[in-house]
Length: 129
Image (cartoon, rainbow, N blue to C red):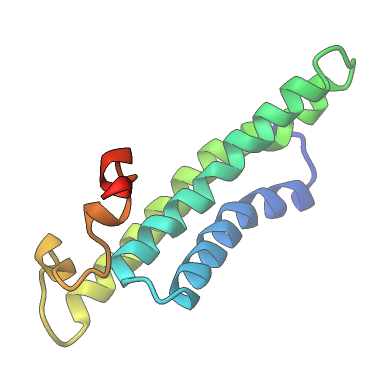
């Protein structure tokens, strides 16, 4: 794992950041609130590791190269922790030095476009009436 070339380390370091960035941009393009954009960003960036690890294990279980193929997903976990710490540090610095309200709570989402009734299936009795 530690004998991997620098190109592998750079690719592994960039994968979660790319997922975080693209997830946030896609959520922003869909006009979601920035709290929801951050959630989509984190989920998108973190799911890459689990998907890659699962695909490698299921596809190459009997391959003699399985150990070599697991290098990248194995490096991804510690690098992802460092990436997340960097993102949190940048966010905390931004929240500290930006103008405007300092605390963001769930009450900022009161103008949310969705309600629980939007996600519930209608009953057959309601359809007949």
